[in-house]
Length: 99
Image (cartoon, rainbow, N blue to C red; front, side):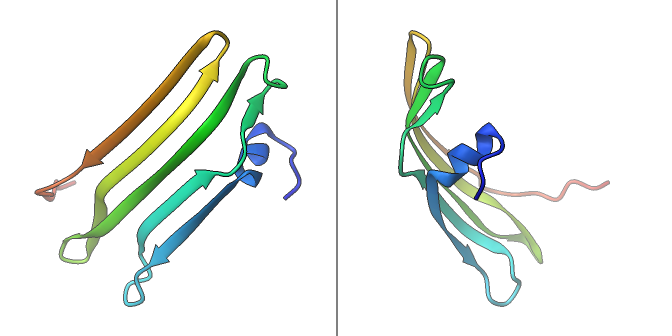
């Protein structure tokens, strides 16, 4: 894709896989990762060295789908600050909240 914006450059350096439920056409699982480093302002401002993640979805209430798990790992440098962070979020016991 042509890189007209910063996000375009990052997306061009990413790959992933999407799983779709055949019966409902709902997104079931998404996996993604950066395959190359992403530099911000030629690397002076910062660099995203690694980033990967996944999102799992399932039917939670009758015909309603919801997130059940999200996982990510990032290795990011911004100026002189570096962060390596892994997160895992899980959701259970979904309840309907009326209008």
